Image (cartoon, rainbow, N blue to C red; front, side, top):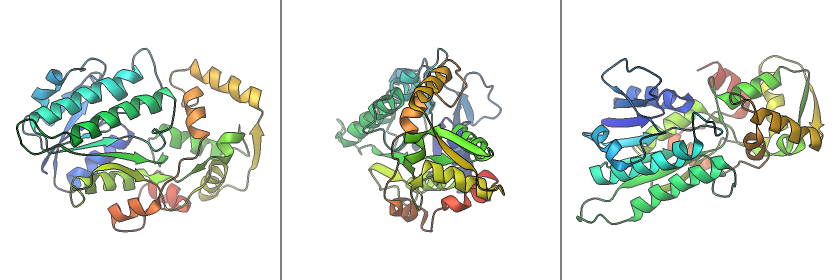
Length: 305
């Protein structure tokens, strides 16, 4: 698949996916925010707050073999309505893919959205389900059905990620104070480079893979232990860990809701306070090698390989 349309190309995951796909020899057409000016013929502006019909997307799909949607925001804001970005625009894009004869679509979602009731989870899930329903539908003209998969990673770690920066900042503190549900929630962090490579595989040697693909790192551990490990990897001594009392937890999340740029808010509290684990062999199979272990995240995902 040589011509790939990538939305969210300038975001945390999207930047790594674009680099990996180009390294594999693909031509990547980047869909970028209207706030940015295209700097090459392989960039075009897309507006996920306004491009809510298939007709808006069809002109961009001429000559495109595959589409990767890597658009994602943590929370709702007046400028970036999460329902439009996660649900309405992706569904319109996927409808356009089916109409245009795009052969393969990869939707980047998140582990746990199938059972979550946050805005993040419900809007991502709606787009995921719409894509999978399109792929299950026989084409009216008897042509080739849309091939699609939904990638749901655990916590994605790397330089440029908002949650990764939050974890690294917490790892610098001599005493870490976090809500008890967050400290105890189990995660299986995935290096962003590994996720990008897995997505590239789903457009290449694993392009026949359909449905939901859960991507999790080699080993699960509680969030508190992950932060302790990041601290040790960064060369700091052991830190104290204290659970934040429940009233202060709720207050801190509500205060975060008032700061649109803050990665800490009611949505992140709900997501980080639940287990986020899956079968580690799925990602390893896509990579055809061991994935980056959480003990090596700082050296291999934060500082680069």
